[in-house]
Length: 164
Image (cartoon, rainbow, N blue to C red; front, side, top):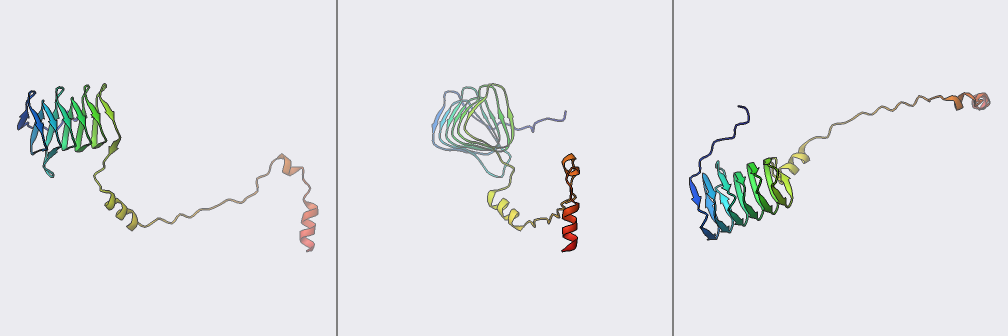
């Protein structure tokens, strides 16, 4: 009821017997069952979905909003919305994601980086313009007495201090 995923339609299919050498650009939904030797890139700024099935292999970079993987990717992955890694997923490369769902059995050989949707230069600019709050610190200098303090005779040093 509450965790429903956005419904996306698959507009295009690359079949299991298809082999493509070169980059693939798409918008909408794409399912890959075959082999692609090149980058797979969704049109930026659009709601896009890519499904890489169990029989599929992509050798190249993948950039898409919503990515569902149950096959193999050799290259870096950039998912700007949701990344679903199903049990037979094999990724060799760095993975950048906003939200991640990873099933038992999925393997990623690379770095996982959570992308919060803010670019590094914007974050640095934000940090540079944010005022640092002033923190007042109070230190308690009240002497703490213990058994050893009670045995020390301080009257002589007090008399010396008074006479000076």
